[in-house]
Image 1 (tube, one colour):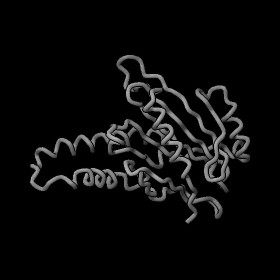
Image 2 (image 1 turned 90 degrees about the vertical axis):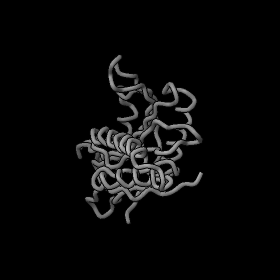
Image 3 (image 1 turned 90 degrees about the horizontal axis):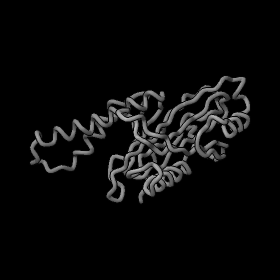
Image 4 (image 1 turned 120 degrees about the horizontal axis):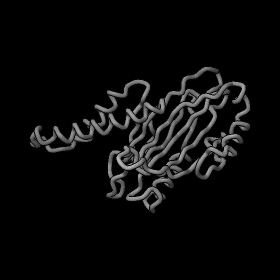
Length: 219
């Protein structure tokens, strides 16, 4: 599998030592949609790229409905990510090994009161020990910085609700050199049929592999 580096995602710099952003190495099937600026342009470019390889003689009236459906799906995903005040949204647009992937990664900036977040290790301990954090919570490391990883299964809404059962993994890591600011990276997948099936396990492994490439950027 050939990897590629996503564009630098901006994390607003408030100090001379804090990073300006981060980078992830993405599998070729995945794309990044920036949420702070250029969102509409990114969606338009992704839709254009998706249909760029079609033969020139394919009638436009046959392509139109598929273009509109892809654009609708991307806009719906963006709307959901905005609820989390996301910095970036990552989605798999192509099938992976012939399998359609229902998954997403949302990167958001988190803020804690300065009096709470002066000591990042203390916040990490709180997160690790918090009784309200469902699922399995463990210590992790992202680019040399101590982080907290939580994995859980989220139940579906009541019948008629909009949310399906999903498998979720999130990483929470402090922004080095900038007390009170943390980054949250949340992965979610529906699996093939159940959120705890073998396919969901595979996608969680893929996400963890992607997170192992996480690097802060100061350039």
